Image 1 (cartoon, one colour):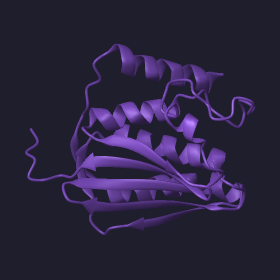
Image 2 (image 1 turned 30 degrees about the horizontal axis):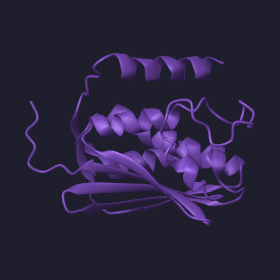
Image 3 (image 1 turned 180 degrees about the vertical axis):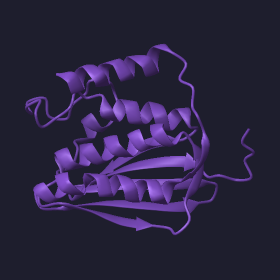
Image 4 (image 1 turned 90 degrees about the vertical axis):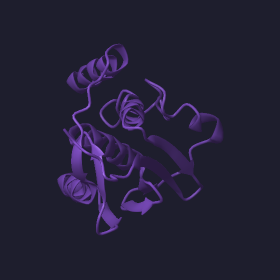
Length: 178
């Protein structure tokens, strides 16, 4: 219940106030490595692992705390919906003027009619899941809000074998920070 209340307050804060980003030059590669490491005990307990496929240099100007929340939410979601004993893979690379981060988990395909709603507040793919194993349906809405505040986006691609959550962020390019 406490987690639900905290998520509710956070999404309300994002929606009702102008969220100030504290942007700074950020090593996304290191951030993703650290987040995967933090999830290791939970993953190990479920027979899962987090695999990384990252370019050696991934830097962006972003609010590191809020971007960490995006990747934390995506990993939590992937853990909740993955097949038992399957890996979760994080891919990240530069593409033109963007950095692409993909969180892939092996799972059932998300039905096409539900894909459009997946980033809506309080939407849960399986409403029958117990609250102990699932959230309030706010994590992906929060992730989307944060990605868009950074001038980026978040989308998904779901196939019968896996689902990718794709975060696109502007790459750091001669940005002057005050």
